[in-house]
Image (tube, rainbow, N blue to C red; front, side, top):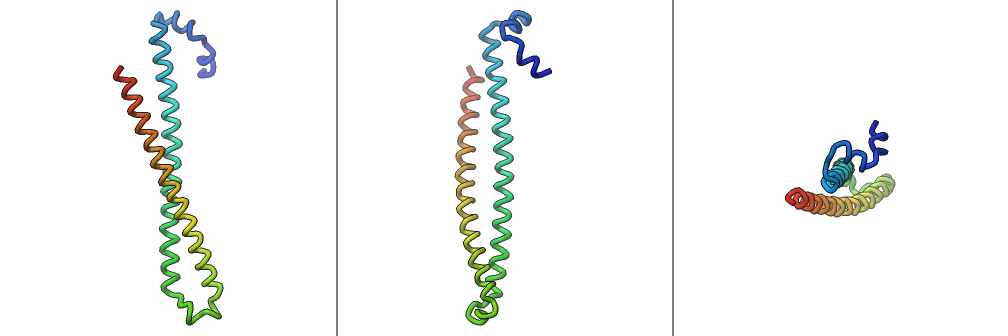
Length: 129
């Protein structure tokens, strides 16, 4: 049904509805901008959910790393727990990588928020005309 509606020429709709062509095109453009905005917001919400999950993972990993660090005395157990030391070192590297990813996500989140804010302002201007 929707596909068939897309194939109807604008002129035919304008004639059948007896509307002003400029007004019809303005309403149609606004409709497609709204659809585009909704798709963008859906994608943004999905990315923010992924970001929140990553933050939660980072927090949990940090807590686990802190607990391990408190119980491992490198000087005392070096020969028998060398693998633990290596694991901790790898985890610290992973945490550093995750921190960099989080900074990147925060920057992306900020940029997306600015885009949404500017889109909202532009849309408000269009509606006030």
